[in-house]
Length: 349
Image (cartoon, rainbow, N blue to C red; front, side, top):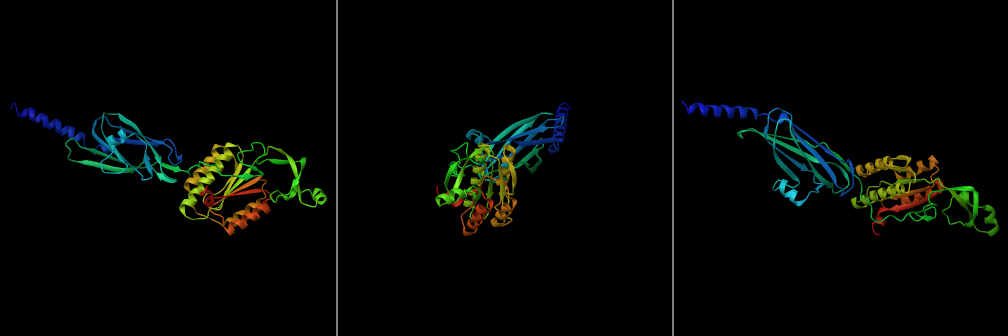
């Protein structure tokens, strides 16, 4: 009898512990958050997480693991990867926990994205088991964290000549508005100046086309036009990188610019600043190279709008007879400087 009572107590205690260790999944709260929703290839972001026991009883076993998307590169140390990597599975990292009542565990994982696009970071798997190991519950859910990865910034700035200067060299006479009341002199017409600047008096005197040299005011502005013409992926990706690089440069120089495209980059009114740039960056990241109208239709609309842009930067995947004819119409109809960047030609630099 003296032996039976202790054994019975142990059995009852085990039964109570087993009962309390069952159906623990509903007692677990899991939260995660990424510190940025817009990034660029190879830029480090951080996924922060918290696993919490919401009940008044301890949870003996909690296993959780992250399965990251193939486009995600975990940027932790090799020691961390060896410690938490699930053997034989790519991009799967996990750990096991014991959670006290109303207590939790916090952590973070540094990662980057390998390429442009819109990505769900991955999934989380949660596993709980009873005390005796007779039953396990496993649930999986999306992390619910979507990150937009914009195009990579080019190392070499594109050679943009606009309004007679190399963009990046002249800080006072770029995208600026001539003051017609201040004529500094005359020079020979090159074919790129607006027709309104031709001095017919000087032309008659010298028997060749001459244009006025004006002084300048500081009303600088531009328009960026992008031709979404699906070609091979490498060229389109370089085209989007060109778009980002040009916009970043205009932002750095505080030059207000409008953004227009004939496809899924859509359009943005003239502006400058972080919000303006981030809007364009997200559209670059989300682009699937879809065009909604011809580039010629876009040019026709821009000419009809008759905006006072001081210059146009046209970005195309490749130079073709069709877009060359459209660009020629823009030069004539918009009466402004136009410079063209073709991704396929830039790739050879």
